[in-house]
Image (tube, rainbow, N blue to C red):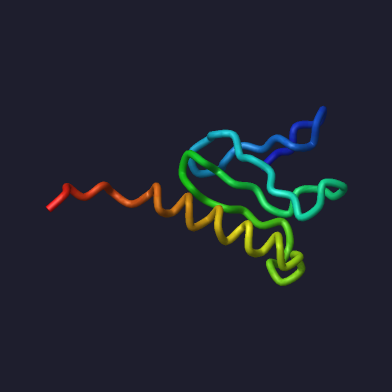
Amino acid sequence: MATEPTTGTTRHCETCGASREPFFDSPCDYPVAWLCPACRTVEMEVSRTSLSPEARRELAALESFMQAGASPARPAA
């Protein structure tokens, strides 16, 4: 994955080629993870245990949200 040299906050997914979105633990730091909304994957830059408790909760919620969208829709019974 290449980082765009001008901003440092753009990457493309190796799986599907879509733009990944950066996830920050702090607005003053570099991204700690990259989210791909197209194929619903997460690429970690650091260990999850090094994240703040708030960032771990937010990242877990985002992953759950993305995975919920990945499930095929079931017809109503």
